[in-house]
Image 1 (tube, one colour):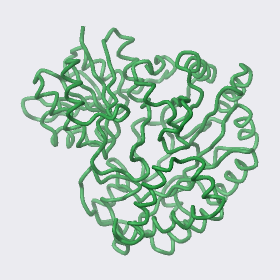
Image 2 (cartoon, helix red, strand yellow):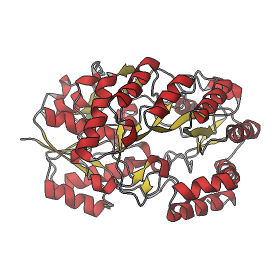
Image 3 (spheres, one colour):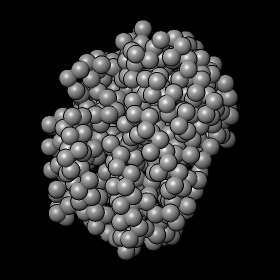
Length: 470
């Protein structure tokens, strides 16, 4: 029987100040593992981050299991760590087939193969069926969605059709993950351990996104909703099987189909699950209504996160997000009225950004006054419109470097504006974080929800950047 090892790479050397030390069970790998197992493949998961494994320990784990196939789905900032895993696998046994998936590799399949001689295949886009074909030995030339090497030349095959019936997929294979390593790690606490050994698991009510934001790359196109009853079936299964009591809807567009969102809430309440679970969603400001938010609260939701992006109306229009500042104001006010915690996510460094437009963003953040205010520096992720603009010198952009390990939202690294250097963006970001959270009611939120260790680490990093030493 073919043996597959799906892996999360070790912690990168250059760490994002907010995500440093963060651990979470990755639902993409969990779906792949479940799909392979459903089709008779022996599969294991190795989460190096959760288990605190360095590269030597990861290599030993690969050698001990000795898989036929090593699969990795790295984010952009993890790509070099993933390359090292492939090299380690080939050193252990050149016959081990190495496969990448995920948004970075999907956006740059040929370049990814070109950068790592130890990498055999890239799975582009939705991965379940394509990976299964490769694992079961289908001729690569016949595998849509794959990129590979033929006689030393890189070949990128035609795209694969997406799975239309997402309810046909098995539940994520959380039993293959080191769940005890995730207990006490919650999204609200920036994914670092707290003293309560509760388990939070990710869940999807839909795949894809119908929108076209200029800073986002979509691995999944369009929007494919799941049956609300089956979503809650999965919630209940995770509660009974793994003891999960916290959930995070990770699709980013929860209740984009408002009727579906309401049905999920009603089904949770109907089954009597609401008193036993708490959950968080990411969604859009032009989706939520007073009724929806009230029903979410009733069903156990405790926090809603919005991608606000900017406080400048013209820049928001140019992002192609399709939302307005007034919609943001209304959504945040309604969420607070419903008794939900609110997270607002912003970016500085949009195309043609200025000090004045950044000032409007921070003024807007203070006006909204969310519980959690997060501001990242623009990252030109592969496959995005912003990336294309940066490469062409449009939007007032200048690429500083193309080191994938520098692609961290909270530090910035690869991109700056001609009128605002990276160091200036980092100073602004850090000083505004300090100003926002150094207020009594926000300090209470910080000390209540973050460990002293994480607070200290973030504070040191912010002070260094604010003083121009980051």
